[in-house]
Image: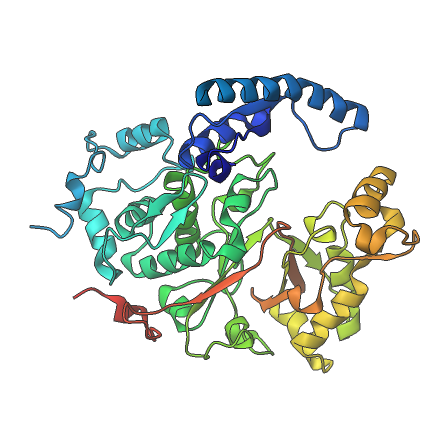
Length: 75
Length: 371
């Protein structure tokens, strides 16, 4: 994702809340401190399909906002 | 002027503190530069003495340690080796282990950051292990021996202090393992009825090597009754077969560390190491039915569909993907016990030989003494 961001592609990482610190630390390490992290409740593993859909519903509006913000910046 | 003087002018290289072990320990814990146990204060004088056995440039990284991708320069590694209680003669083995861990196949990023409780298991072979005093006899995986304790601890401290494997931010292990303090052995080559690990891997016998494995803690295999190779291996296979192991789902290279007495019984039955691996590949299996219904449906039927989409419930699930993936060593003293060491899944072991700066194999640690 860091490489995609550097190439100008709009990119984001879906990250469960327990992993947000690791995600933001890694974004800094890879030189993209503003890489959007789409926060979902932990866990992601071991979920029923209904719960996976709930996670997607949490992530989707954040993804749309990320795309809008990136387009505004580019424009 | 000391060789360290210019390097110590770098921002943050030096911190002032009361000259008192408790004050130093308090400071290091407060900074998060610790494994929670007391350390030897890494003063410039001690770090310089540690570097007496380093024939590299002190500020040139031998590795980058994730997740921070911090530069593992000899001077930084030496500070961690001092803290861990290393003798200067141990230092080349600490650097060697870090170089091996940085090999791509080991997957240091994944093994540092995972929720799985893996840690580097360091297996030393060749003359340098004996020279350093690494224990390969009684309690080889346990406490008491300075080289085993300090070399493994120095590597762990470097992973935390240089690589930022901080629990909860860079090291996401759910519960971790006590092996994260140190997990470092030498192979008991004198009591090994087969070729030692480094020779099996193609290194000359006189080479000194480290093999690094992303391991869980060891599990004991008690067998006081079996008199035959098949008997011992039946007990080994029983210990290897666990549903909660990454090795049931992924590749990985688990380690079977025979105690010398078990090894003698197995070799006495005419089995080579390759025979042992083949036998355990075939017999260390669990029927699919032993896993939970959800695990069968979600992991085996879907994620591993190529193998298990339509497999019957008595289909064997193997603990090693290929016979050669099982690493077999001999370590420990007298007694009817061996050890099984499961691993992380997405990882391969890496082996490196101790070399001088000019690239020639080092026949002795003394060849690496500076000047």
